[in-house]
Length: 137
Image (tube, rainbow, N blue to C red; front, side):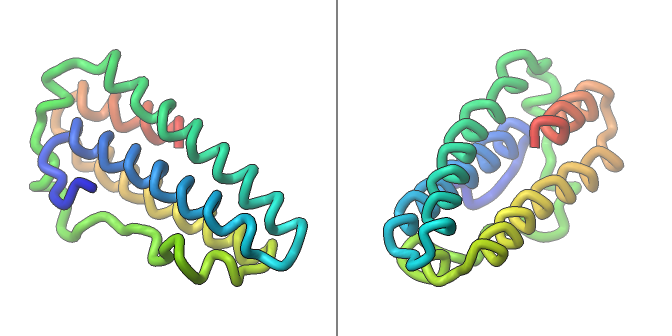
């Protein structure tokens, strides 16, 4: 997992890795939740996160190299948030509504980061890249 985000290319890879990690956590916990409906939601959301893992990389293929190589760390005053849960515990104990809140919170953290960075982007290519990532998210 990327520890430090230096460029917009790193930001894309970090986002991809977050989706990958979340998909793994959700699919792992699906069999451990006592609520059948929650288990089905875990599988659905895990599949969605796997899809997001691939979709989030598409703008990188079309992006101007100038934007991908632009340093982003000057704009980050803290490390981006991660889901605080791990695949070995708390997700499995959540009910349907708690799962939904957790997933929405996860995506809100990422979209808030993108919105923040859009406001600070100094070159149009970086702003366009972030806007496309925000739209995907």
